[in-house]
Picture 1 (cartoon, one colour):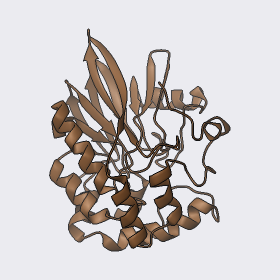
Picture 2 (spheres, one colour; picture 1 turned 90 degrees about the vertical axis):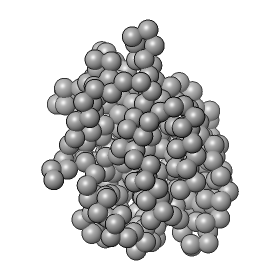
Picture 3 (cartoon, helix red, strand yellow; picture 1 turned 135 degrees about the vertical axis):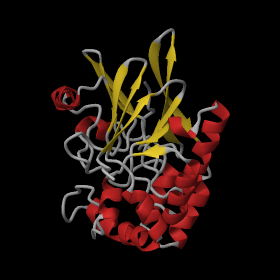
Length: 275
């Protein structure tokens, strides 16, 4: 199978967008309940990758995702897992705090995945395309050119523009950076729906997703908060002796380390997120 790219064709109706599950089974279970309450079918639920990550239940999370039937591209973590690599591929600076912590959680996640889960990961595409309300949509993890590229709202538009031009897209849905945002210019929109596995550094334990729909023939994008049993997630991480820094973030909503953030996003730590 060529797993580089798949085209879902035309999608209509409410579409649920999210990323970065990070082995957080409790958050994924809560999000599935949201999709059911909103009447959104699994085929209209799309993840930007990194189903596996920092939290304590990688195998259970992958299997739950598979049984749900939602769609996902690979994140850098899935690429590394399917290639049997020894690191997460997050593009952290060697010797940085994030790099050091990844040497704790990544081997744990790798050791817990069954062959069935690895087979599922190997079938996931690198990119997803579809059309929505006559807009050409592309789903990437970091960017079209680099799965581990961190793109934030403050990232210069010229970098985003190159992705639109090369992919001939109107709307790009991306993940990886961990922060939800919308950036629109020249009728092009870069959307990061947020991640559900970790809080968004705003001082709240709730996490983020987005819903895409049409109203009066126009596309609307609504970011929403997701509440879930974060205390259980924290307890499981501590029991499995995963990094205490990430377990603490689950409770506080504050990133223990912001070395990947540009100055604008770093200055927003602990502040309310608004759109």
